[in-house]
Length: 433
Image (cartoon, rainbow, N blue to C red; front, top):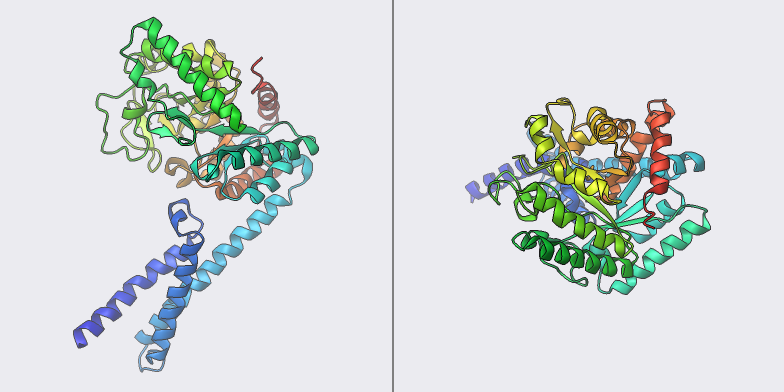
């Protein structure tokens, strides 16, 4: 019995710091599973343990150990209160942004959401340019989502704002976030073995199906297709979430370009824009940027001749937008990811390729960016010529990320010329006629 009691005390000592850490970091994307009911459980357990420790007489016992343990279990609730207060103050600061500044900066942000009333407030204030739709937004019936999107667009019009960009990830294959209710099509890679004419026709048909179904929901931008070249092996043990080996179309640049361009034109024929991704390419990268920083060490000449050929071909032959990934192109800018590198975005894509369409970042909530200095990345991305900053996985991080841009703008750290050029590109961005 004495051994069991001692084991329980040791367990309480070890559990205490874990509860404090979880409470203090309740808003971190990695702890998103603890939101809502999880936070309530954490507080209830903390208070219950604290009550048991006090009732067990630890505070009255001689020595300091018992008192320290009681104080330790006071911290989870206090830490959670501090974290919640900090979040609410930041949120309030963002929502109270001056109207002109909100619209000036807000046109660069696209967010995922779980609370419709919350995203309404952002949309009608001009604090965002677009929303990212995924499975949990569809809920039980697509009609509900269609009504919500229509209501958002009505509020935008009433506020004198441009139409909202409404984006989704509907690639086909394993990334079919809106299937069901939308048709789950095979991955575009299944078309690679077909003769050229047949694969182009089939890819175009896939694009039209996706485009028509997305349009019916009110979605006007698809974050597809993937143009990364397929790696040597489908499964990379260091790739936990990207799974590019399963999503890539082919290891042949010509086949990738052929299928992707036909697919993009199919989307565009249905009134939906395309976003090709993830430049400068993930096929040669080992680490998963959802969690870790990653470098691409391949010489530029080799990338230009292979990995980048599909990007250039599709961008030149369509109105597709470009998504920049969080991979460090070491030959060009070894100090920062491509998504916020001026040498990559402005130097290669804008000036060398002369691409003047819309460029967006991959999700800024991914570990390669968020776990480093996300504020620096936001400022550098806008100054590099990136047009849209995507906050998809955990939409509440928008408040932190927008606050970074707001502070930088107030301090004169954002390049006015870059922002003006970006505004012009965004104005043209979704015009498909």
